[in-house]
Length: 135
Image (cartoon, helix red, strand yellow):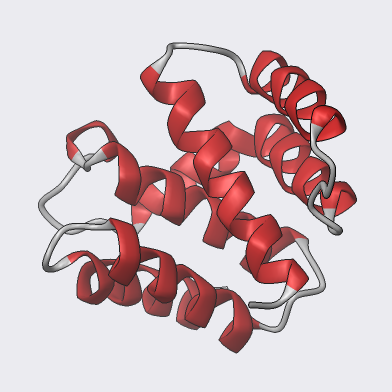
């Protein structure tokens, strides 16, 4: 597993956890930093985790608008929290990072396969495909 993949998974965990605990992303990131500092082997891509979370926090309303614009017969609030976290992470990478679109999409689909519902990967893939086509 690559360091970037581990960083994306950690960012996904943070996004999901913060939402479930009704916690701001800043507070969740601070707590994450404390936990990672205490580990003997912290994630090698800690800076990327921080970049993702801070980037999503800064642009969350724009990211959520982008996702919402590409949902058919759904609203963002109706999505499972896991799917919302994966979409936010992927859309940030697609629109605001140097990550190639194919890599960002593949990583999102891998997270959806591992953590999402039965149809999550197909659903997320469709939303991300529409966003890529329209951007």
